[in-house]
Length: 116
Image 1 (tube, rainbow, N blue to C red):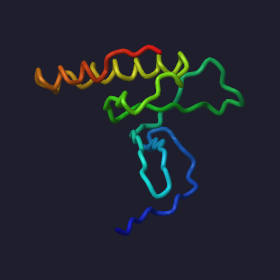
Image 2: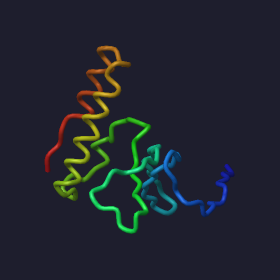
Image 3: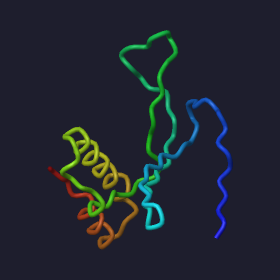
Image 4: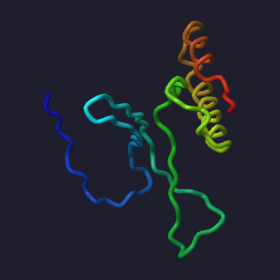
């Protein structure tokens, strides 16, 4: 199979752009895994604004729980666990209105809070 990926262009990131965050791990000749999220670039409201340039932040567009079987929780620091639990809580809140009872039961299980 031939895959094509267009060359990246050096375009400055600006508010209202859509970008993807694609962390991954690839074992040469064996397997690979990639997590992909679509994000919207937004202007950030920060306490400090050095050089009056402003800052940008990201807001999730895609909401799907991360599979805990893919994580070694012993490697996560408390701030990462907090981030993951908050993300999963947001998944439940945002997706709940679109799910039936069995789908909601699956989502609740998939997004249970974790601790290390």
